[in-house]
Image 1 (cartoon, rainbow, N blue to C red):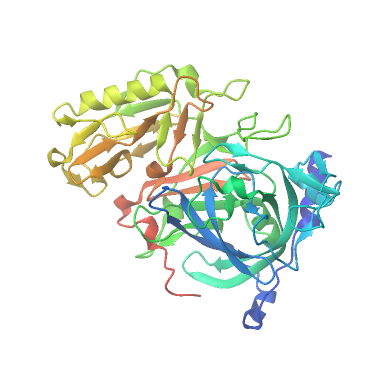
Image 2 (cartoon, one colour):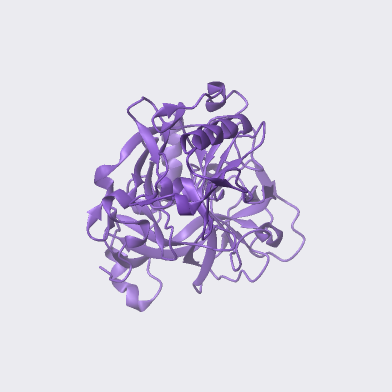
Length: 438
């Protein structure tokens, strides 16, 4: 009965493709197999940013990418003007889909985006600063490029895309010019689920963050994920189950909500094929939602619970005992003289770090390009950070460790596909062909 109800909600919200300008007239009969967004790295905040268009008339909005974020939220207090904005009324199908349990009844100004009575509300949060507030659920048009997996294609639009209005203060701590956050998490109104519902494609997406100044990508939909010179990364992925944390990890949430973030079952850590001695109970998610391993784009580096951090750093330092250590550079604890470290196709010549998954033969191997951070011309640091003694999550795999690795999140099958370093395949996440169009 519950699945039929959810299907009814989804089906009632499957949105037709529309065009926004005469030059896009052909798009009306065109159903994309996938959509693509460019992703750049902001050098000052180390946040990953994307841009797509919203509203009528269309306005490009810059957003911080939040891999596990619940949904799209944007600042509606400053300059949100649109003739197609619609509030999501209390008890509507949209509110049910969003799992809202609250209704706005105390908006005392004239109606406007972010301030409408009889509108369901959610709790948008800035996951960088861990601050949240309440905000109205609304709908408006969004527009972005389709793709066949090789090049960008026609621009398509979703006319009633659900998002939450945030407050201007929520932008504090986000990169300059950002107007909100793009949540790619498991929620039914997260970007992946809404786009797959709108265009009837697979409830999957792939993210590939670039370590250079060039664009990485998010592709909503199935492969191919083709990177120059013609390498389809979807053909060489390793798979592991995605784990559901039964307790929300958001700043604000309704009781009983599970986390929308993506957790994987790391069972052990090896350095140079030797297991690191850990308190393995920290690797499991407990009944309160503590522990486990999640993947994050809002943490620039991997964050480890203190005992795990100390064990990993000690094991790594012993394995590279011949490399002279230098004074640590915050936020890192182990730094080395880079003149004594060689170079390989996959980065600095240091021992590989393996995150061992469902079996000894399935592991995510982290090579030097992802384990080491160049803090100056002659200093390389191990790119892991101490997360304290009782963090909510024991291991948070951060952005630096994700760069130039393609990750595919299959929400329907609850499965992660990962490539490990693309440098082995002689390509990078910057090699999606944005220069030509289909």
